[in-house]
Length: 121
Image (cartoon, rainbow, N blue to C red; front, side, top):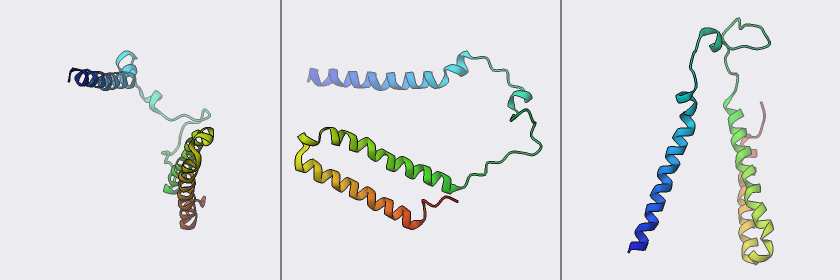
């Protein structure tokens, strides 16, 4: 029972350390760095020409959908590379599982294509 308890102490320590380091790194510049905001620093600046009218982003939701689809299909390479490296040791079972994975990815790609999610406007 003592062995079980000592493992959880390490896990709790790692979780607490993760939160402390994460919070510290996210907020270190606001804690240490000087903050002297003014109107000139807050103004947008491009090519030495001050803005005449307010700037508004012209991005449509389709831009973000295409970006998310790229990330999803790009993750495929992260899973295929280790499979290709260990192809000999995985055998037929590993091959079948990877073909199912690739088949599902292709099915989702065809679905996105038919829905028009890949059309750039």
